[in-house]
Amino acid sequence: TPVASINQSTQAASEVTWMSGVATTASGGSTAVLVTNWDYADLQYVIDQTDVNTVTLKLQFSNDNVNWTDGATLVTDNAADAAALAQHAIFGKWARVYATVTNTNPVTVTVNAILK
Image (cartoon, rainbow, N blue to C red; front, side):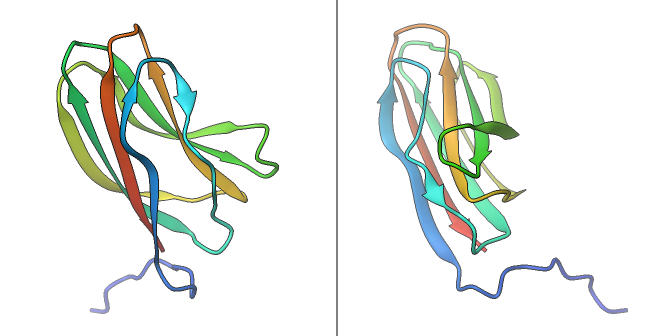
């Protein structure tokens, strides 16, 4: 029996770093990345909590790099060290990761992806 395949971009895979060991103390979005040539992101996040600061990470998309729409929630109300790797669909022209935090204690966030 043949294995079902996911239609992936014919564009070569590309590495993206949305956040690289960013000590986050306030809610905000990462730098936007142009994603029109890819269909999926193998996205990995790492959260390092020193003094607890509850954090939620969401993938966001935009066609104008101004108005953002929430995509997949990567982690919700995290209050401990955590890491995960999952594949997410890509939509629109631009993508970023948005971190929502609940206080001013620094939480270190790293978010990398392989765009496919």
